[in-house]
Length: 163
Image (cartoon, rainbow, N blue to C red; front, side):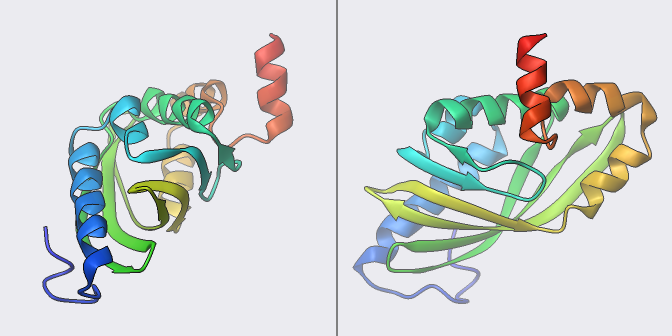
């Protein structure tokens, strides 16, 4: 995988580490599991994304990935291009799967701050409307979404843990 067919990556010693990280990211998202995705992350990771609460640490990340794959068991990703500068890596990719039997996809850009070759911080940028639309169009999936713990306010997650 190259930096976007020659687009954008700065060619220096730090780019080699970025290229290795992007290759591992692409491989992990081609056949994702929580463990494969966790292998990309630093123990002190911080994850930020639309529709979810901030996630801190590997165990919280494992829980969040588990919720994602319970809701979208066939979710996988395809990397299109990337760029790096110093410890920052930007990865443009598409996530694909189904929700309640209907195809679903959305485009994202993840910005990673790397430490020791692993993601210390990830901010995911994407338009959440394809996810919201899929949820609205599939009333049979509302309960599944609610029970997943994805997206609900933290107070609802606390309520779910008690019951």
